[in-house]
Every structure is written in C-alpha cells, then in structure tokens.
Length: 405
Ligand code: ASP
Ligand code: MG
Image 1 (spheres, rainbow, N blue to C red):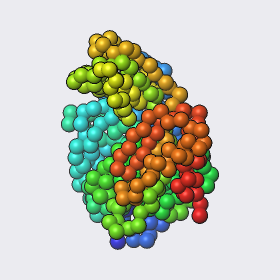
Image 2 (image 1 turned 180 degrees about the vertical axis):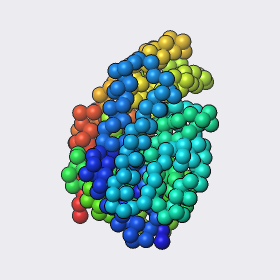
Image 3 (image 1 turned 120 degrees about the vertical axis):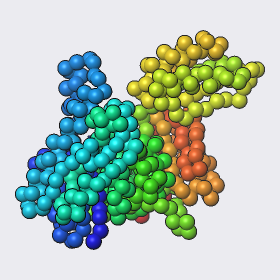
Image 4 (image 1 turned 45 degrees about the vertical axis):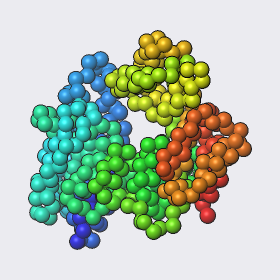
C-alpha cells in the first residue's frame, strides 16, 4: 500500500463532468489499495473571475478580505469533488488549508508556508478516507486565512506530500507532461519521460509555465518525487527526480522562452562603488523583481547597466530609475518592452563545452541579434527581439536535436 498525493488543476475540475472523472480516477487508485490525498485548485478560471469581481466592487483590496475571497474558489471545488467521491461510494472529507494544518506567515495574497501539521489529514487516511484539500491556502500566525499565491495549489500538494512522507506527488494538468519546448511553438516537441529538479527549476524560471516554480523548489529541497501528467488522457507523464550521478545526460534537454519581461538600460553610469547598490536597493524596496543584470566594461570612467523586469513592473521601475539616474549622475534611462528571452537548459552542460557557441551560431544563422546574455551552470539565456523569439526557439530545438526521433 502506497500513499500518493494527487493534485488537480483548474481545468481538470472545471465542471461536474470533469469532477466525476477525477473521482473515478481516485476510486481506481483507492481500489488498487493505495491511500490518496487529493489537492484541488479552483474550478476553471474561477480565481481570475474572483479577482475581476474584487476589482469591479472596489479599488480598495485589504489583504485579509482578498484571501478570504480567493480561497473560496478552492473551497467550493473541494466540497464538490468530495460529493462526487461519495456518489461512487468512496468515503472522503474535505479540508481547508487551516484544517489541513498549513501554518503560514502573514503575507496576504502570497503567503509562505512555515509549517505543515498534518494530524487531521493523517487521521482521515487512517480512518480509511480520501482526504481532499483546498489548494493554495493556510492559516497565518495571526490566525487569519491566507492564500499562497497564483499556482499555489502545486505547492500545497508538494508540501503535504513531504509532511506525510508520501511515495510521490502527482500533478494532474491539461498537458501530458513536461516538453522539450512549448508544443504550441514547435509541434514536434517531445514529452520528456524524466527530468531532474535542477533542470525543471531552470525551465520554470525561464518561461515553462507548469508546474509552479515555487513547488519545484519545495520538491527539490525536500526530495519529493513529482509526476507531471494529464487529467485528460491519464497516460504516464514526466517524472521529476534527483539527478542520477552516473547517468549519461543530454547536453541540452529543453529550450524555453519568456515574453513577460522588458529590458531597461541605465546609460553613462559613473564607475564607482555603490552605484549599482543604490539603484538595485531602490528597485528591490519597490518590490520590482529584477533579473538578468549585465554591466559593461567601463570606458573613460562610465559604464552601462542593463537588466530585465516583468512588464507589469516596468512603469514603476522606469519612474524610480529615472529619479535615481539623476541622483547617481547617470546619463539616462531607456527601456524596450518588445524583447523576449530564449534559453537552453541541460544538466549535461556542466561537463560539455560548446553549448553557448552552438546557441550563438544558431541564432546568428537565422538572423537573430543577441542583446544580452546570461548563464548558470546548466543554462544559457539570450535576450532577443520579441518578434523573432519563436523562430529562435524552433531553430534551437532543431540544432540541439530535441525533436521527435
Ligand atoms: N487557483 C489558484 C490559481 O489559479 C491556485 C492554483 O490553482 O494553484 O492561481
Ligand atoms: Mg490554477
């Protein structure tokens, strides 16, 4: 008998029929002799809808009330799924984040899990029931309901899997696994049977939308094996696990792209200690999420600093950086919101030279100019013109031989 956590995303529980299919799947797992903890997201686009309603009702959104509102989506889904289970004779009970023992910090709308005390969930399983958890929620150290942020149900699933020592955490979604690149851009993209935590983390950080990056981080830290799979075809998906030390690794495993960021350049910055610190501290204090920072070699005592920020933060980042430019004596600030980032990711890169060279040659041969470059031990990223990014993805996917064999 194994204990498995099964998490179903919004599209997987979008309507009554979907919920009955999910219930049937859970019933099959239970009849196989396994114990199941179920985690559900809000139905379909319900979270977006609740956010839209809040905006329509008021321009004032107290964190406490927002979290009360948003978590209602998951609460509705968990009760309905339980009813679908009862309908086919599977004993089950639903739990809010608070009831499930998810203790969080007080940061409304994006709370962090401090501790999971799964006593009630364990008791429910011991009594022979399926425990159904509302995803992405908890209770704060101030005893308030909290929301774990967008995509937080993945984190709920991984955290409860860790707290209960589950065999694995299955993340059911509307795609059949993790692909070598976005199949909408490259139809020959291949589903990967396995991938390492490190690689998936780099992929989610550079544009791969699922699973939520935070859940992959949590899974890596605590060694929770993930299985990303489809709630529509039910076929075997992608296993995410520790890298095997002596495995022959693909040099490049995946190509990702991200069009959610804009580029900013601070030109003619005086080359002396403290300038970058001043600028990036100010942006951090404004909660602007800065990425891919590149500084040029200084020439005649001045240099340029370029970096990327999410589109959503661009206006506020520009405003603050313009003020700071004057303060630190820089020549000016410019921005470009038509850029995109393309990345190649692969654990085998650690021990194989030439990946960056191949990437740059490939981009050059399709006429794509590289505006910025950044690397990690297992990733190379280039900022390119947004209009060319899909061509770049296709060319790189082909150049690294990632298409269907
Ligand atoms: N329903 C929430 C969202 O869409 C949480 C989740 O699905 O993970 O962000
Ligand atoms: Mg969701």
